[in-house]
Picture 1: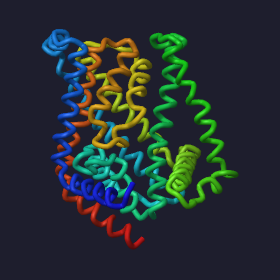
Picture 2: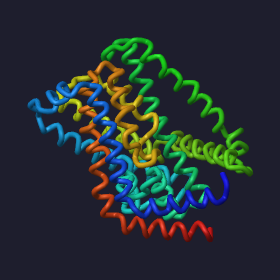
Picture 3: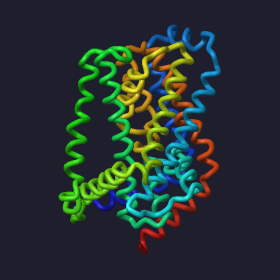
Length: 343
């Protein structure tokens, strides 16, 4: 990429960062277009019949409770991960601001993923640049470890018919988790971790080294559950709350699904988390999660309607408190931009 083009893209990106409302509107347009296209595929009459049927609106309260629990879980995860290897203490107020801002992706980071806010939080707590990057990568790895192990457990339950039943083509792919975890343990062993995490020249090599460093942080956290149990517990609560929200949204449209099938369908829809995707994965998550649930035997139309309700609580409502934090997040970003130049 030529320098002029790179500079132009950076300028356009900076302007976009300062116009969160534009991103909100664009994301809303993308989401609406995707949902309408999926609804057209499902059949307008079928969708309207489901939406206009009598519902028990108490399930909406369960959706809200699930997402509030997910917020609390993520606060615990941030604080637990920050303390690994005598790391900085992340205050509750800072953790809560980071979670609210990061889940309300537009108000906090706009065109970048919510993990950027986590980086800011770790930096504010006193972590150096590289340590903060490694902890952010470790945060993502911890999420995937918990989610993938949960998917593996759900697949075992479904394969043996202990909580519903699914064909091998659906359950056996989860076995890939085992060799992936074995490789991760091999790479993060004390014999290799120091060498593999040594930073070298080149963007790809630096990313690889920092990724190994992040995985080492997760290994240290998992090896000492008594000391760092809040990080593990927080991630479990986070996913438990988020899945509860999805379950309640599906119950709203009278869908009953075994827990194991729900966990596996949720995992299929969240191979990329919304916090790692630009603009919160608007449009992408709706498609991936609807197809994931449909693959577990849920009707396409009720799966879509449930996902729409779920995303209201999971994604759109968090934007409201995040907008209230805009001044604090903007000030945080400016201070970190200054710190990046001198540290």
